[in-house]
Length: 328
Ligand code: G4F
Image 1: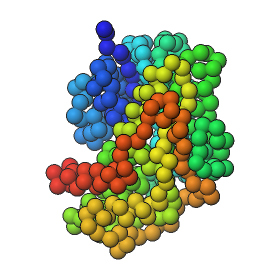
Image 2: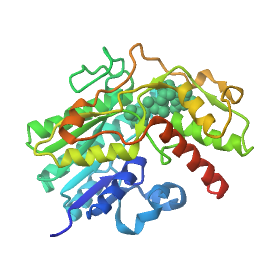
Image 3: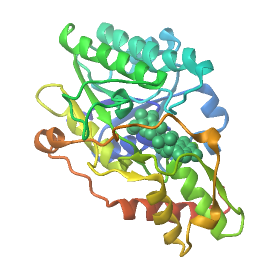
């Protein structure tokens, strides 16, 4: 039987790279979209796919250029498409608004409208986010919880989520959306709090840094393990019919708990090494963001595989190894 063809936008990001590995293991022909600047700085921008890049067919494209997406989809004719390329940092900086809307909403529209024309049978995954719940009315949140986004990031993701639903309901395309809570790994970007902490722990342990500046230590998040979350995405596209699923562990922890756990991996107490910098503060949630993945457990047979402690340890140990091997 011919291998299934999958197209992944943002294949060099955390989720794109784990998903590419999973699909390769399962015998797919994997195509990935990357921006030209990634090819110009492969040591950094393609680091996540370094181990298997030769098995992924890379296409240079920019999702803000509909013609480039049209050409890629027309050449690949994917049977499954996973759309990750977007702005992923939750910024409250109003100057970022136009670019966030362009990468999260307009680019999703370009991709879906192109798939409708060229590959209407393609099964598509859209990456929604717990930020769409924003200032949530209740915890834990599930697929029926009202959305109440309060960052441009959350608003643009929610608009794209409604667009994805529209393509499913109106154009009868197979479009499934994950409403994903924070998911972390050694491939997480350094701007996110978990990686910022684990890379600082590694530097402090090796005497390369003295402290880490952070925002609100009492902020809480439902943190899971990224490779588990890409398993859920793949399972969504294997269902008889498309739907939306919350993917989360159901347990939230504070930044302080993350810190304590990360420093304990190297036998240190966190307190002497942390400074609080108000510039990292964001509006805090009155109701915590914590997900209820009952539907995914029932319909996708999905469950997280890693404990919080093991996730944190894997990230710290990976950052230590990278420094010891001169990679960071
Ligand atoms: O790691 P974060 O920046 O992730 P955030 O904002 O929750 O967003 C991530 O998860 C979302 C849900 O899946 C995605 F939609 C989104 O794309 C991204 O992947 O911040 C986590 C928490 C926040 O409450 C923040 O206020 O950590 C708090 N925090 C405290 N000090 C900090 C810091 N966050 C960052 N980035 N840097 C700090 O120094």
